[in-house]
Amino acid sequence: MFAMRNEKRNCTDAVKIQHFLEQARVGFFGLSSEDVPYVIPLNFVWLKDNIYFHGAEKGRKVTYIEHNPRACFTVSENYGTITSPIPAKTDTAYRSVIIEGTLLRVNDLDEATEAMEIMLNKYVPGYYDRPLGRTHLERYVSPLGSPTAIYKLIAASVAAKEKEEIPGRMFYDGKTVHTDRA
Image (tube, rainbow, N blue to C red; front, side, top):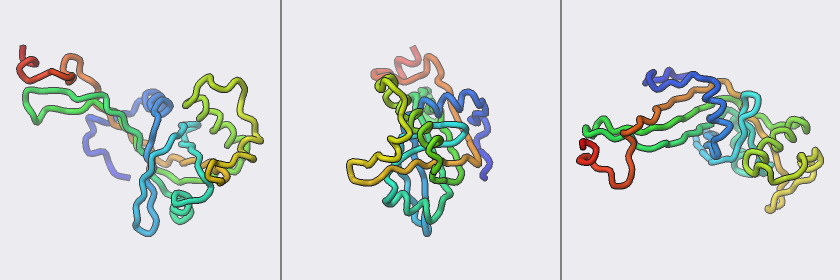
């Protein structure tokens, strides 16, 4: 594991990190196989300190996971640009989390159903009028004809960085260095 270069940006607030991961909509999985990197965007849930996602049980992603289950997952959110009359002090307000660990296919039907239920509640809250049945995962086949697999990234490390917004210094359309100094 690498040390964080800019310690001032380090975020160690576990509640803030958990809330961020529960609310974030898309994360990026970094995989590699035989020195070939592969990064893909995914819907996900943060559950019991692990990342869960689903997808076809066959394909490039699964091939990479089978060759090398070590992975990196990144989530970030840009909150806007912080202005400064000095160009070198212009900055970005953001939060990001990088999780490194090992991917496992979830074979326990109860665990897989729980993860999928939470994912449905995250992405379409209130849409379904009853909980997801266990048999749904056993029978579900994607529109491309592939059964669904559920995976989890068991987090070996979680690192978060942030730069808070600075009220009065955030950029907006029409803001210029001249109006900033007024």
